Amino acid sequence: MSRSPGAHASQELITSYVLGEASQPPERMWALETHLDDCARCRQRVAEATATQVPDVARMLDGLWPVVEAAAVGTPAPSRSRLLRHARRWAPPSVLPWLLMSVLVVGAAMVLDLLGASGHVPSLVLLLGPVTPLAAVAAAWSGRLDPMAELTMASPRAGLAMVLRRTAAVLAVLIPTLAAAGGLTGASWALSLLPGLAFTLGALALGSVVGVDRAATALGSLWTVAVVLPSLFTTSLPVLLAQASVPLWALAAVTAALITALRAGAFATTFRSAAR
Image (spheres, rainbow, N blue to C red):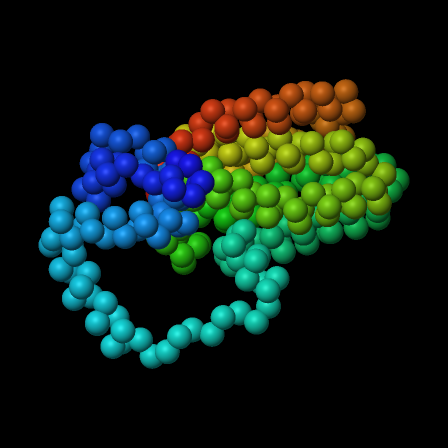
């Protein structure tokens, strides 16, 4: 759907949209909804088509707005902080406690690594780095935690673009945190960052099938049981966190990113499932 001036949706597409017909592919409907955000003329045509094609809905809306206006006490005050308003566009408030918890986990792991500098304890920064972002990523896509999940689900950008935006918000905080922790403890920056990126992208790729929150929970649990606990028991890092494994982590991250891109159309559906 073009955004150039004078480019409008066809009447056939608008009619299908108003009637909720399943003949149009979801991607085309999402493109129309995005176009409607910027095109007053097409929004007017949608309103006209609604009145003509589904008069019962039009009458219901006409009767609903006076009720809403009568019940409204006043206009909610906007947030005074421009930074806070911008941050809320990138991630729901429900992510914040999980993000803070992840930062605290990295900080605690760094302190324990520094205290255990004798080398008898495996690096907790490296052990926990791969799964550190997953809790916040899962929270960002849990309909049970997000009070605005239903509105998010209905928004025109509820697909891959919003998935990437929320994930980027998490990584923007945790990548510098992991990099700092790795630098202070002497761990390889590649091993501090690449596994976490690969696991995050893996959660998105698997999340296109089962939902991002479920995928993140499953991957985090698997890594904890299969790698973290045995490493603490043997007091040695696994082969997966050796320097030679860096190319494998990079390959895993690239592969997961490609799968995520190829499965882009599935994310709106999986988020609808998470919101229920």
